[in-house]
Length: 188
Length: 239
Image (cartoon, rainbow over all chains, first blue to last red; front, top):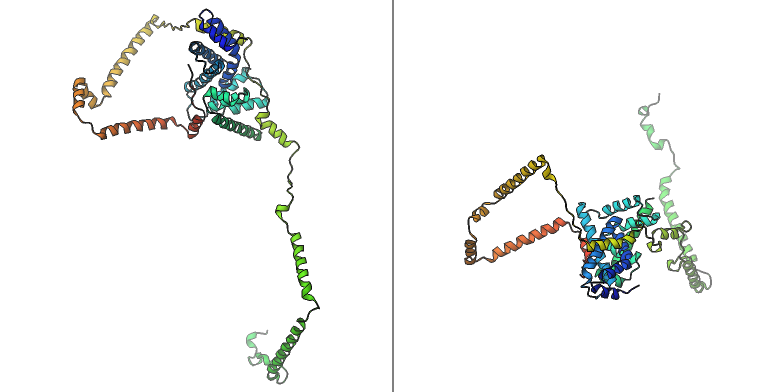
């Protein structure tokens, strides 16, 4: 597979630009999609956000400074787009700021289950429901660390947050989730 | 019938009923004194007998005492030296089962989300088509076609314009109405010639602060959210 730096070079050439960009999409679409999907839950919403992400990549790739890796940069755009999407959706659904953020996404999760867009055993579903109770940014860090197994240094590069804060956020998230799962177990 | 009232008072005296030996009371004092003297002598004799003890008693006494102390110490329970045994029991594999059900690090990290069949094959095409062609969404309004709609629209427009003019006129306070007649040049000249005191500046800034405070209060930002925000700073794109 062609390297990112070569793709960037090809992108600078107007004749090869489309082809280079197509290869870039093919290379990262799945990773970016799953990153977004785990945040927005619904497939159609994820589809919108992933397309918006790559459109922004298209517009910004020409001026990309190569300070960080292309993938990290795309990941960062996808993260921003996901968070903005979730905020916008809450505003549109008139979810009060002091209300539990999870209710909206819980409904989305339930709908996805009913539409067979989600399959998993009981504990996996419980985990997802517990995850939705976390604030968006904390859930984001958790997803990257727990599901994507990213190093803190990488997450720090993507989010612009210090490693210490990320570690604290992750461990707090783990505790909240385990407490939530414990409560669910105790209620049975 | 016998009645207590009818018994002769004279016969009620106890000395008529109970009898004592002759000179009993005269001899009683002497008898008591004699007996007390005897008992004193007797006690004295006993005490003298107690002071005698077996040969070598005190030499053996300390040994006896230390032996008893040692015995007592052995019987004392020292918690620090007690073996720490957990007497409580749990069902078999209880903790393993608990850990498996709640320790998320031991979960299989399965992806529970599904995508439509062939989604990723067409995603690329969709993105490229969004970039290369401008999607212009036009909303064609055919509402002029119906007469009713036409007149309704016209009436609505007139009403809206009339309300806007009326409301803007009536909501203006007297100052605004008065200032409408004053030209900008006159206002500017007035401000240049007047010396705005510090107090006037202060009141303006205070009002702004109150507005900001009201806005912040209205947002109901929880301390938890602020801390969370500090933990996860706002992300900025590098574009």
